[in-house]
Image (cartoon, rainbow, N blue to C red; front, side, top):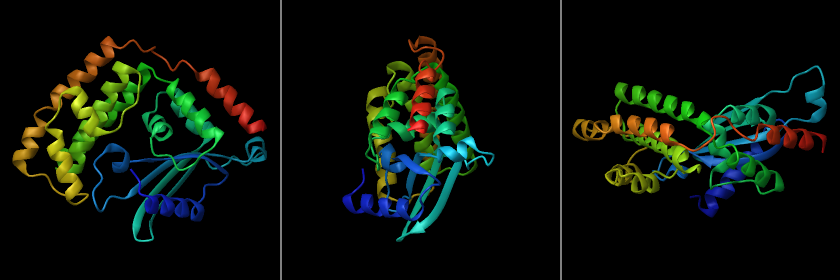
Length: 252
């Protein structure tokens, strides 16, 4: 969650580092959305912007990605926005990062565009997203083996369980404590508590590392089982609706 002061600061940051074009949507992701915020966590902001239509139609292709990582009023803020065409193209190919920014429960922009984009994201549920979550899970495991930390262990569980939950229910859930209860990993509450009370990049002791790493094969098996039993369509079903919305929004 965001306190009123944190929300106000994030909005000031967005105003100071606005993307090139109209900011359509901006969701808070990272530890704030995953349920394991620590005192020194940064603020991860991910969104969509719309380039001016004359730029899209002209010879100079507008910049598709806007990245800013700075210390703002004493707190690190990490902002990434994609131009709407790029973002919806990624969503249509099963990109979980775009899905999560659109469906984050913590939204900083309020408009009809946000609600329309969230509806498109909900309608995109398909098994195409398994590649994102499986790949992310593998990458976090490799990172953790190189330098075992509480944060990377939590990310490994979070990304795998989010993928499992999406495949089995068709709904996005990013909150790790909720996922732990739903999918039979109650011991994760211990690790979450350590992250909330400690440092953002605190090391994980060898005994705990071995204990939590021992259940990684279960996560892999759960992803495989969820994919084989999923009733979701194999492809994102509303690609045409995404394209129609984007055309209408550009013309407007």
